Length: 404
Image (tube, rainbow, N blue to C red; front, side, top):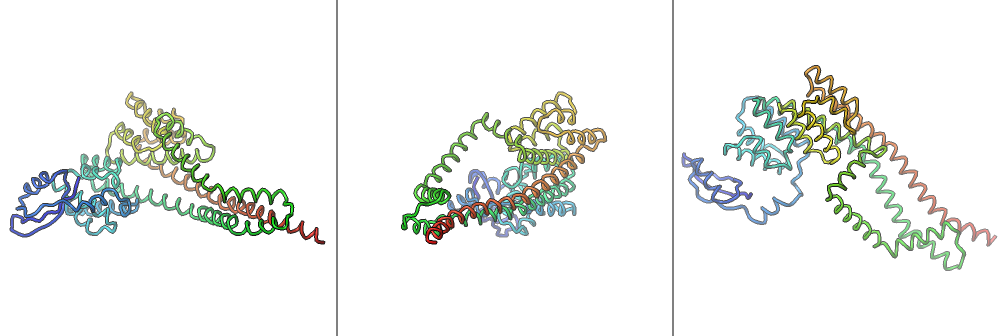
């Protein structure tokens, strides 16, 4: 779809201008005439800017925080009794993220053309996910849009908070990794060759650590391109393999079975499953439809297959807690808490409790791993630098001994 800029006069004769999206110019003209506009000009947006708008990733990122703030503001305006189109128009002018503001403006335009809010949002999957639009659609059907948007904003804020804390915990290890790479690169490129050249010129037999260091330095200097080719080849092979459904299923299953990272990955997947399903059920979505939507938002194929198994079992009449307990990647405590939710009639609330529990466990596990990773990287960096220093000093000590 393209953006079309138009100028027209309304029924009062006032000159107006704006922008509308459409597949063809004729469709845009027809839609504008239905509004009672007397059209003066209707022109497509400049081709270069349209291409950049459609394909350039820069400036088109909408963070969880931006979505959470927008959802909270929309819920507040709707709860105050403001007409939905007016609320969206107001937010499109106040939203700081320019791309999000343009998307909100397009949503408002679609609503003015008799589209529902969920249908208008579904046209922008990069901003409003399938889960988001499904919750909004259920809220529209149940007449609880303001309450559902408020709950949705709280869930987005919680998710954004967890993501921010995880990113913060990874800053120090990444910093150490970069420093280590720079130190090793400087030593092997500038420092070591000078010392090695000195020892070679005096025809001194080099100790084993020094010979190893010389060999590594010469290899990196002469065959650095081998590493680049190897990385490109591995990445290419990986991308090709990931296109095969069977390999992707096996690979995703392996990610869930690794000793430490597998446990963390399972908890992350369980937390997302519980939060998504709980949010959908809170919005009034039927449980089978909610499970199907949740399966479509899971990137791990092995975990998605188990969610599909859960959906089929629930369709056959099984309880959610029973079938969850039968899956490989779901924990017993999750099944127990879901059973309590089903028995008390508070399944959505209990699912959100499960999500909060796993979010906290994931955050704690990641924090522990990063706390261990920092000292481990310092030790590794110290061993590397120690080996380099030893390889340089040993010939010096041998020379001093011979001279003495």
